[in-house]
Amino acid sequence: MARFDPDAATAAYMATLSPAAHAKAIAYTQGGHWMLLWGWLIGIAAAWVILRSGLLVHARARIERRRRRPNLAVVCCVLLFLVADWLIELPWSIDSAWWREGQYGLTKQAFGGWLGENILSLAISAILSALIGLAVYALIRRAPRWWWAWSGGVVVLMLAVMMILGPVLIEPLFNTYTPAPPGPTRDAVVALAKVSHVPSDKIFVFNGSKQSERYTANVSGLFGSARVAMSDTMFAQGADIAEVRGVVGHEMGHYARGHVFWAVVVLGVLSVVMLWIVARLFLPVLGWIGEPRIAGIADPAGLPILIAIVSTLGLLATPLTNTLTRLQESDADRFSFEHAHEPDGLSKALVKTIAYRASSPSWLEEAIFYDHPSVERRVHRAMVWKAQHPELVGK
Image (cartoon, rainbow, N blue to C red):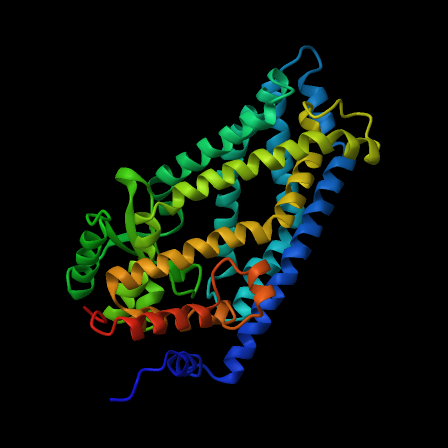
């Protein structure tokens, strides 16, 4: 019997797409890298326009004309900023999040549907941002020296709440989740969940094709809200039992390995560091801008400056946050190999994601821009595992 060659098997998987399909994927992916920069520049420009317009200054002054009402001023400034920023950036959002996706065949959603969901997202963001704003500005007023440290705890708490409530309250606003029908696919997922020590009582299929043609599944929620959800795009693109087991095994890996908890801790620490930098840069930036109507960092009318600093730090932290998620994705792949035993199933699914994530970037491009390991690297790892564990494959 000929020895199984992981390199040749990986090359065969990459060859299942035509050179034209790979070129299209590269154009989409590398264009997305530039859009990170453009999105940041447009966000900075929007913050500048809002700041210079005096919109938040006038709103805060009007609210506090007779007496100080800091909480009402914070809520008003946060909501006004969000709406103004949304309006200013709307043309960019239409181009980047809807038109471009359609041009590359990654969505069939009508513009009206996209806009309606975008407005719904804005409304949800307004509620959450107002709550976070109230907490952070209260800390700035009451603990001016250490507000940045306490605010990191606010971020962690909000992330945890969203992970628990998101699958129950928010995700159903955008998609319809129906129990997976009885049959071999559901039976395979339930069996895999039991082996993986993942809750097996909530197995859903959702209409992800409503927004996107991307091949996806997830295990979301914590404790009683945890569930397995598979997009209908998986089955529209011909997913068989091996693919389902490989992909869902990967998503179960995120849950079983506790990646969400590590992500919350790391993001909390990162938030503390970023807010510490904000606390030290705010006044110098305010002085450089020359805006005498803003009293200081505790003045909610200065929110555009705070947001601009945070967004800049977020852009600079992109390689770090991407590295965190790449490590988790690699770990979830290993979990899938060890529990689902479907290296070929996962590889077949991964090839279908190349349309929106070019398969073979340089190591530098992957390190900076990729929040998942490259498809070629992941398929090769799957083939190496297959070569090392031939007795387990498909069992």
